[in-house]
Structure formats: C-alpha cells, structure tokens
Length: 460
Image (cartoon, rainbow, N blue to C red):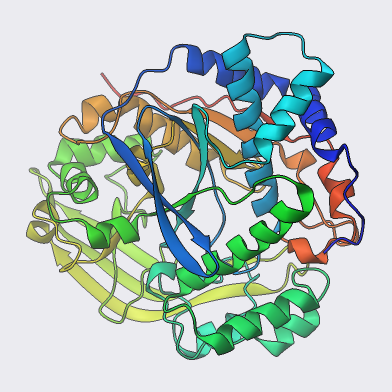
C-alpha cells in the first residue's frame, strides 16, 4: 500500500481534475440521460461482499446502470480493476450532479458537493456496478497467485464459477518472482490467511471477498466509497434460473433456425458456412472443462438449422502477464462432448451446462452504459464491435427474447495510453499493494473517453 498520506483536499481536487480531462465522457452520459427511457423489469438484483460475507442488494430498474468490471482470472485487486471502479464512481457522481443542476460552469462548491457524494454509496439516478464474467479461466492472464494448484487440481480449463477451493494454495514461486510487480508481501500473507480460514466455499466468492476487502480498506483511506455492487454472468444466473428463464431463452432463441444462426454469426464477423471455432454457446465437457480457448467447436447444420454441436477440448495457450511476456498461462484440457439439437432447442443448464458468448448474454445485463478497459490495446476492438452489432440488431434477430431493451448502451473507454501503470514495471496488472505512491497515481489525468463503435449492418 502506498505510504503517501492522503491530502485534506484530495477528493474535491480529484473531481475537478476528472472533469477537466473526462468532460467529453461526462457530457455524453448527461446527454444520454436526457432521453433515457425505463427498460422492462422492476428490479435489478446485485450483491456486495462485506466482512467475507455476501449481501444481496437490489435497485429499481428506472436507474441508469453503468457497467465496469473486475476479473476472476486473479484474486488480487489490480490497478486496472481500481481505475475502472474509481472512474465509474467519478462519472456517476458528476453525471448525476450535472444532470440534476444543469450546470455548464462549475465552481469550488460544486466540486466539494460531488466529493461529499463520493464518500457515500451510489444513490442517485446513475448506479455503477461490476459485471464479472464467471466463465473465464481462473489464470487467463498468468497473474493468479494460486496458479500452480489450479493446474495440480486439474481446474485450469474450468470456468471460474466451477472452480473448487479444495486443494488451492498460494504458489510460492509466483509470490517470489512477482513480489512488488504483481503481488505485494502483505497481499500474499492475506491470501494465505484467508485460505487457512476456509471461509469461502467457491473460488469466485474467495476472489470477490479479497477484492472487496481491499476496496473497503482503500475507501477508508481515500474517503471515497469504492465498494460498488456486482453481478456475475453468465453461469451463476443460468444455474439459478429455470428453463424458461431469460438466459435459457437466449440460448434457445439464438439457435432456433438456420437463418438466426447465420445472422448472429454475421453480426459477430463470422461466416457460418466456414468451419470456425466460435460457437454461440460452448458446451462444457463431462470432466468440467469449459474454457472457450481450449474448445475446438463445430456446428453441424442442415437446411433447417442445427443438428448438433461437437466440441473437442485440448490444452490451449492463454495469455502472458505484462511483467514477463514469456510467462504464458495454459488451459489444460483433454475431452470431447457432443450435444444434440434437442438439448439446445429445449435448453436446460442443469442437463447441458454451457457458456454463451459475451456479445449475446450481455443483452441481458442491466447495463445502460459500459466502461471498456483499454480498447485498442488491452481489449479487442472486434469484441466491442460484436457487442454493439448484437445490441443494435437484436430486435430483428432475437425478437422472442424477453428481458432486454432495444437500445444500444453508451460505450466509454479507458484510453490505453492513460491507464494506470506501476511506476517501475509499467504494467496495468500490478496489484494495488505494489504501488508506493497510490495517491500520486490517482492524481494523474483520467483515461475515460467516449468510444465510437461502428456496428456491423444486418443484411436486408
């Protein structure tokens, strides 16, 4: 943790600096709010972790929900995580304030009023939240300090939502190699303490508990409430809902006939007639493998539509961390699965667990606005384009899907060139505990800017 003390006027000056460098993003949000229409639904159910325990929270659907995220591909809170959360809160508070007061010129009293709102949990019209992808591999980017035991327990190709805590432990080689760059000694000690306590039964609970604990510590120190609520998708809601639930219906509707499948492929920049590994939903193997990178999939189609989905799971190279580009993680897998069309058309997650593509299941996220993390360098532009294309055309392609609204979310981006990096190693995946002068880093110019996305057109 930074040894630098937080200055008395830190939060108002932070708000002022944010509005000077991210005003275009704030104005885009305020303009979007002016024409905002309430989507279908009554409430949005989210959660937070407090003192290692999960607490459910809910909000009326007439709020404007602003999405950022943290990763289940590691358990420590990173600079990237923190920047997304802090800039989401700054955007929320400034957007609420300017929208309510109709101000174009701000004074010192305005910055102080917004700073006071930052001390409290989100409560205005805009609600920031974390959309955490729970089907990701648990060491996707080679930054997980539990990495060796994930491999030893044969869970490196499991979706994070299915990873068991039994047998997981801190990897001493990782901790020694990356102390000060990816993980601090204090954070390593905390992880070992929490593992010994065995308070969390699932890996995703363990990761969230550690990150919320760090966010609570930072909130007290900085005078900014950072513990914003979260939502896991797609596996947690799929597991909880019945076969007529919205995510089940999404899988059914997206495979209903040949035309629908072909149109969805085109919106994601693919040709259904060519053999591709991208599947609209990726069935998990009997052994528990669910890594989309390790899955070599094929849709078998006829003139009417789907006949079956065939998947071969094989060990796949994932991604390196930013400190050692030669340290690449792997999803270790070896298994096959074939799913007939009837199991998709009458879909049951309990019978056929699978992971739908983000561009599809994000239709059912409550997000009205999205903060992307470093599109153009750290995040793929094609993923965002697929997301925008699906949202824009869902009314025609998936007309029978309940629970979504026909309006593309506002897209914002943490500009890659201005994302926070470790002062020595220059990496965004450093844990917050590795940064000596965290307050100084927080004072740097905001990275948030509007993201212009050109959606792929749907053929007439």
